[in-house]
Length: 195
Length: 89
Image (cartoon, rainbow over all chains, first blue to last red; front, side, top):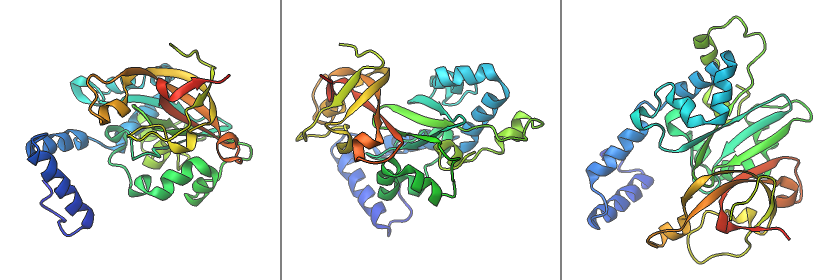
């Protein structure tokens, strides 16, 4: 792996670390490639968007999604036969309540449902400011919440990975599930956009 | 020990000499158990190669921003292993 971008400092550090762990006999390069290909195969925010659209269209699915995110993902076959490799917790926005996801310790994130995480999600600035001044962070993303909206920040500090269920936008009653899914953005699933 | 939903807890203060996943900003602060998320090996033990690692309940614990930072109206919910917590007295 890492045939590319060897001139980038982080790539050099990653390769040095790989050489240490393979040299110590802890893993092989093939093991590492396998982990990465499993992590990123079929990983896309389209997956999370499809789950959100179904929750908007089907109240029974919404209940199942909020009660057991892993089972709700398995209904789409996400994660393959073994299901997701993490515990999925879905947190629902409501009128007067907005959820925001962060991992202050590193960059934990439901990759298979949201795709590879954006670089800002891994930045020290986002990780430190999301828990301290989320309304300001949201405003810098162009999201101004209605006056009095409570913000609930979720710090993925253990084994759960979080996904936001946004509010269904007004005026979308005519849309099919496919049309609804097309409205949902990665940032909406993180909480840095309304949808 | 299983902590009931709604229990007020304090995240342990102090700075362990080893890896932990109790974020510094929550240490010593009081929050409320929302629910138990399940049981997982303690990362503090796994990182030190303790075999077998302790397996503990992990709780979603909600803190008020005002309690953490002295300002702010939002909440911050963390997932914390049981040994990171003590019941508030």
